[in-house]
Length: 448
Image (cartoon, rainbow, N blue to C red):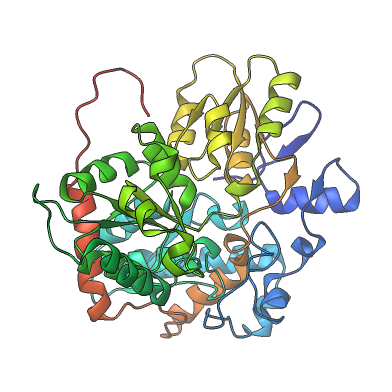
């Protein structure tokens, strides 16, 4: 994989696949554009040393839980190393480790990290890649904390899952705290009369959690007859849940839940929001009785940045533009777009376009710029004109990857992510239910 290919990402600005380079060019005045924070220029270990927070980028204004993991200072040699030295050390360590270690890279990682990944994909694809690499002693997950937890759930007991920077969390996943979810469940059970099936044999409510949640939340779902979903199979999972329950409690992302349920014909009135800081989530009992989907008050700060005004501007400036957004975007944005789909859907849509096409994409900038560089036959740009990467994905840097790999060579496993068996067993059950929930046969040629 290379960071040297270039393409036009707007009508006036050429850029590389590297968001890092784009940010530095904008800061130096070498190219037009703007960023959401000047601190994006700071080294992640300098960010790690500051007060707790998600770091510069899309989630920088989100409050972080007091118990969120923090990254201790890494050795000076990695902080001082040049990009060229880190490249040499990473490649040498990978070569010496061979099949003993596998490096996984999420689509939203900076290109300077993705170039070393053995597998690139979304969180579930990478968890499956970890599961498939049974010969690897160590799985180095260049992503965020909940993804590393899922890899630990699905990998073998003797395999070590490593997160290069412990501060790489996820503000959306953190918005569904296990204590708040347990309290929500207790209140709902009081309203619905407990976990007792109705006359039709269905339970009052089935919990459904998005993959972007902690292992503790997945474990909660597994214990209460629920299931995990991804952005690509959310409708199939909701259908599974409605076969078994009269209602669904969906968390942590309200937008994925709302967009999916709306496409299934559920009205907005039947989708009340649950605010965990209010009694009954801010609802009355009748509203909860009438609900079909109870939406948790969570969101992705990356995808919340996209607006209908951005789509209107894209259509004005690029007649015939094809607008594709992620279903974590707010409902008006999804409704205004031509298509919505997972990161993998977006990638496949671009790869499948047989004629030169202008694409306006509503998802994380690292993926958008990489797709633009990989497909110079198309014009591909991000709907948001402000360069604002995922704060927590941006915490992973080649310096951390070199540290993790060379520590393995020295016989030390650093930053290992483990899920206790009391949580892991029900969490795996919820994941297995998801894997067993197969979509109905497709009757059209469209891939959605």
